[in-house]
Length: 172
Image (cartoon, rainbow, N blue to C red; front, top):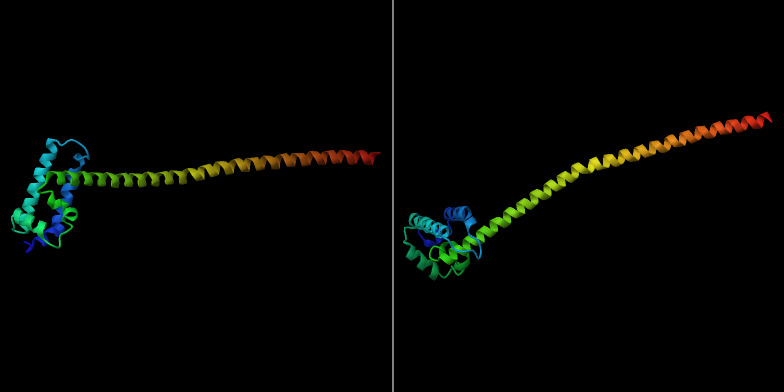
């Protein structure tokens, strides 16, 4: 058991429970969506989980914890930093918290997918590039070989003609 409510608020085990719960259940919460019975069931489960954590970690009842959080001078950031706790007493805060987490996880998933797609596009480009380069190189080599063949043929034709001209000149 923690001795102070502030210890509970900053306990990493409590934070892990809350984060795990929100990550598992947030996908059904969408901004500006209608509230349904699934949302209220998740909310009831969340309240039950937090109440058990409060009891196990502090021994305080939730009302004294709420009073502490609302009136403690060092917890001015209560509304932002401790939204997870405030949502115990306020469904609207809970709903917004779950929507926010859903959007965050979707954004993370989108970024990972984007990186994955970018990686595979670069990988495919690196595989295609040598093939394209090889095909271009083969074409260039074939064209160069053709030029050499034409030049050699032209050279041998010119030598034959030179030989014939020389023979004619010598015979005259």
